[in-house]
Image 1 (cartoon, one colour):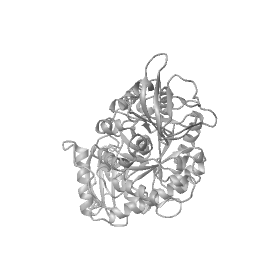
Image 2 (cartoon, one colour; image 1 turned 90 degrees about the horizontal axis):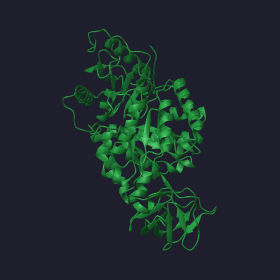
Image 3 (cartoon, rainbow, N blue to C red; image 1 turned 90 degrees about the vertical axis):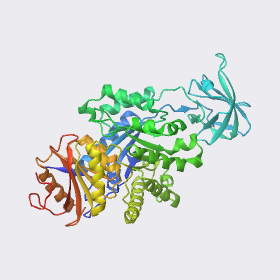
Length: 524
């Protein structure tokens, strides 16, 4: 029986991955197989495909490179497709752009073809309802807030629809810069025609996750979920792993980047399979000073409802051009981990940066040091959340395993988790030791790459007996230096192993025991 895991030993040394997962965005800087290999070696377990940039042909080439590298290295690696969402943009400007000065009046027209410079500049906007949804006093932010205006008045006259705004922070506006309307309730669909084309492309090619941009409420998530309900088959998409039960679907990560999403966060988390704290647009749409506090609130909210949380945007921004990070960036990554983030994400650092492999390695080193500090803290192994489902077997087993692991000082948790459900429940309890999750389902192995502390191992098939599984796991643990002879471990399994939801046994074992002896408490 063959297994693959993110626990390889490429350089003749024990390699211990971080509990916090690393998401790396792919792009022009990460299209070569050698670069992808280095990123996996340095700790990346999820690759983000940003549909805001690049063609489907380019995405297909990069996806093939990732899948080939993962297969060659025998490592489960997930791919997340990030949908663009309804981004509002400035129309075509003169080549040099339009320079706006504080106090200057500006007209925004939804029906203009091009922007016009002049004493009262006219900016074309891609959103047709801009003159209706903007109200006097609403903010208009351009180019991630570098240029700021306040709406003074609007005209909904069919012959002259426009919004008159006054510049508060000046700057140069160029073609296709983004427009944010943080105070306005927008009547705009959560998914565009381009998004639906990306969904169809991604479903056909077996992407492991989709990230949904500019989520405002749970209905936005449900819209995408309904599409999966109609197009997903178990063969193409696999079964649910997070919020979705066992129905064929693809997990949805809701990107939290609007004030409306923060206001409806519990409903959004409940409808989603995970969330991403997208601090870029969140910092534009809301008071920047509030973002660190909101980040902590969102991570806690995700944990309370048992969903993984990714913290993203500008984590190691200086490494786009430089080989080292700033002290502030390193502290930012460490604080996200201390907050309890399940994953931290790199964007331009790996997509277009000069040293994508160094960026991932830096993030891994920060995670290593931070997690070591947490383990050395006497209270480091604190349960993330109270047991919310006391009458369900798997949550109760996971909660009990947490107490056992803490009391005996377990070095590892070992589980057969066919679809990832038991691994998810274990991850929610905030173990500070690796959770080795075996499965014969390749899609489930890849999707478990997002779960905090979970390291999936894909097997060609399940052992016939739980004792055979225990012996196989024991051998892998010792061979890879994940535990020393006699180290305590907690094992969880069910019968048959490959049946989803069958886990019903928890036991304490010690590294080096042989299946079939009287000291083996998991023998059938």
